[in-house]
Image (cartoon, rainbow, N blue to C red; front, side, top):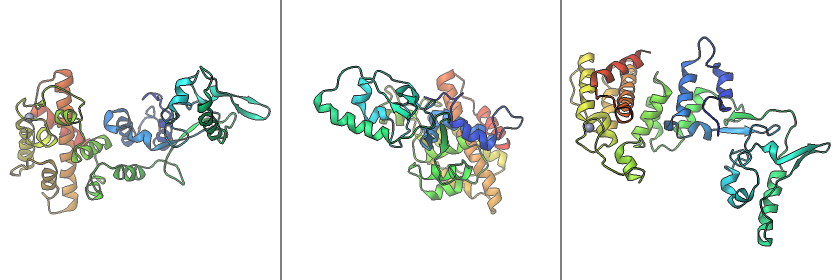
Length: 313
Ligand SMILES: [Zn+2]
């Protein structure tokens, strides 16, 4: 596994946006790293990276997806279980000689006769891979032919990620000037894939009550926590007052967003309000997490202030 601090995938972004150590790191870059690190990312970033194996010193033989069809560990479980080495880079699974690279896998026990065909097949697959002595393994953004990272390409991939929300919503979100992590979150919320109590319960991940973290009265569904809860409603009312509009808020998330998308008569104005909407939704969720994980007090005013700061930033 790559750690967030040292992940090789960062190299791609660093080459494009500079490392975080530089004076002015791109906000985009910084934020995309957050998408990757948080569970919101759903490992999305990693799933769009591919390995270009050099000498095999960085890539983990069983754990990394370097042969394109997923981890070898999962595809060849029986072999993995019988392997002496686990959690080691490719270069530990053979040696260099004058004739080049030679695979040398050691097993914990002898293979049974009926297993041998499988082992041979496996060896023939990995034998087709050419290692390159002295060359570093590289992580590339999977966007041929250039294999270079761009924000546009990242969005395109997000759009095709199967989040259950069609391109129409994507198109209305992607030109907003908001943090990718906020945008990504909203996307998941639109497709009802955020970790509300109700969703976790449905997936069988959590037991216990499904009551809203903010009000403690109603079931915590996506639309409830973000728009119809009496606590989040306070935030939306503050927002309306601040914007100088009066409106009856929709109880359903996407309708609520639609309403926000056409407050102004011009596109640029609507874009601004849509960005504010995204910020508010994102801040409500972050606040909700602070309440549940850090015992923070529910505070609508704080949420709205945070959202404004984020929106202006
Ligand atoms: Zn509530």
